[in-house]
Image 1 (tube, rainbow, N blue to C red):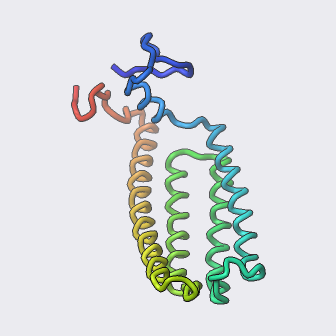
Image 2: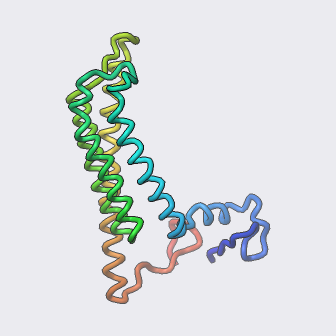
Image 3: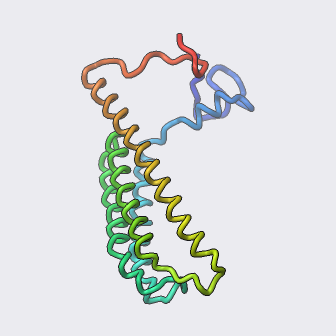
Length: 188
């Protein structure tokens, strides 16, 4: 039997909730409210707009000192990335069903991947004033980010397919999943 979680301390079955793993797991899985998600989208819009402006000032400021003039070749795709972040988060503020969140995240992942690939190609960093190992570290970090972005895109694609399947079943009136067991890995 699942333990319902209430807003206060303790569990609905009269337990204290102190050290009760089921209570903590249930609280950790509780979805954020629509209002909280909308606030998060608004913050993401503001951060993307600020980042768009700041990144476009870097070369004029001469900071960070290891950026080269080749950074100008990276700016167009960076700008697209920030604008895409603004647009997607504004869309999510208006409507954010799971399938739309996953589809939007796949789009953002694709743009992020394009930024990473272009960063590898341009490599607008002059790290010669630092330890020679830093160029290698930077290039390895770019590759790791590319691999992680590909993995994240695959995960979001699977989530999108699952969300689309749930949406389709909901329209037909079919139950979305069998009753769950109180013990993971077991069936009723």
